[in-house]
Amino acid sequence: MRELLDAVADGTLSPEQAEAELNGYVTGEAGRFDAARQSRRGIPEAILAEGKSDAQVVALAETALETTDRALLTRVNDDQIDALRTALAESVPDATIERRGTTVRVLGPDFDQPELEATVGIVTAGTVDKPVADEAEIVCADAGATIDRVDDVGVAALSRTLDQVERFRDADVLIVAAGREGALPTVIAGLVDTPVIAVPVSSGYGHGGDGEAALAGLLQSCTVLSVVNIDAGFVAGAQAILIARAIHGS
Image (cartoon, rainbow, N blue to C red; front, top):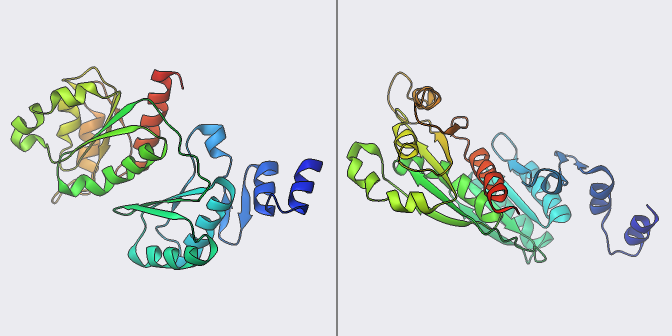
């Protein structure tokens, strides 16, 4: 305790960092940020931007940077990105902002990029699945895994799926995103001995077109796979990293 107080007093530790050390979280006007989740769970807390104001997104991102030297944000819109860039240009001018679709990673100047000797294959059935796959990808990249991304190999033209089977088999873990009837993950899972995490995507027409048909089909899969919720790219990415670490003992 005295060391923390001395560090705050001499300026080597901010009050936010000290609070994170003591409580595991930091409380601000925008809510509580779980700064200890990385050390406790192996995956950092992500800031869900959807439903939050620009100011709340900025505040939480700055808290994340202050306490963990990086921020992961999901479901970010253009206005929130603009607000984040403007604010960080003043508060953390050396920060690096990486964006994939609606998912953003912000790295502070002292961030130490981890390395994970594992390959995560990320596969999409079609273009509409890419934003969900992007969310999974940025989580896996943040953990230091090698990403092998294979897009647009849906089963409507099965030859394009079969052409990539060897790449699927080379991965340590596979994340497969598909909408409509959700067929692609079940097909791939029947061709490989790699753990497959299926992500149903909210695409399609009419009945079940909001991802429920894909979810139901994947839950009933006769091939062995794991299924996350509709559009849950972050969860799929986090689960893939935990599996990859278990495989490689890291």
